[in-house]
Amino acid sequence: MSGANRITHAFRQLVRFGWEQTLSCLFPVVIFASLAITQMISLPLLPRYDWLLLLFLLMQWIMLRSGLETKDELKVITLFHLIGLALEIFKVHMGSWSYPEEGYSKVFSVPLYSGFMYASVASYLCQAWRRLDVKLVNWPPFWLVVTLGSAIYLNFFTHHFWMDVRWILSILVIIVFWRSWVNYSVNGIVYRMPIALSFVLIGFFIWIAENIATFFGAWEYPNQTEAWSLVHLGKVSSWLLLVIVSFLIVASLKLVKGKEADLRRRSSSRQHSGIKRMTST
Image (tube, helix red, strand yellow):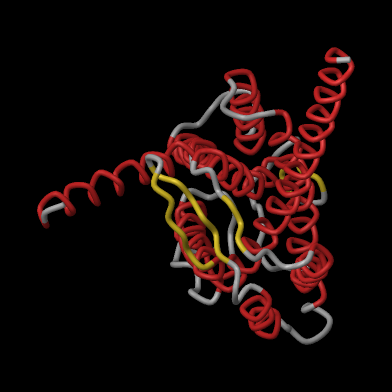
């Protein structure tokens, strides 16, 4: 292949990869569009937070009915919604950020739509996993993954009362996943990337998304009460750890689901072989 053909091929692969990523980000795009529209246009009858909840529920229903999302993926997304909502209630109580607007669907000062912010991360991971045919290489033992993910999630709570061990946890992530890779396919061609690098990239882009979300009033940090300002770059580490928790949960569920599918295939194959032997006799 000539140099010009290689460049053309690489460009086409990049465009296809970008398109698959865009489709995987459909739910987050709807969230940002809804935030922007409801910020610029005052909707009647209900407060803005309640309209956002209704819009996100409608989008979730459309994705499920249209086949863009499977029932198993909906279960994962619902789990993330609950995990995120619990974290939001605690963080708002501790004064980390706030939701200053009124709403009927607020629980402990947190609007229920906020859980969809976390659910959208799970939606992206599930969609990208399926569209890019993601495969894990040298994945650590299940117990180690669960322990590390739990420790990262608990640190979001405990650092308010004890020392913040996020950097220790970050080092442990590098150690645990040092030999782990993620394989993904674009137009039938398999590429691979260190899992730790994928964590960093996703965390950085979520930080960019967080700046967009706070600009449109999704929530408000203490330093943004008077006027909007850029979210501190240090928040990248928080999102990085949250992405790691998200990825570990999705990966663990995908692996469990894959093992169940393998067991069903083997059982079906054995039954089929038994029927053939009985027929031959």
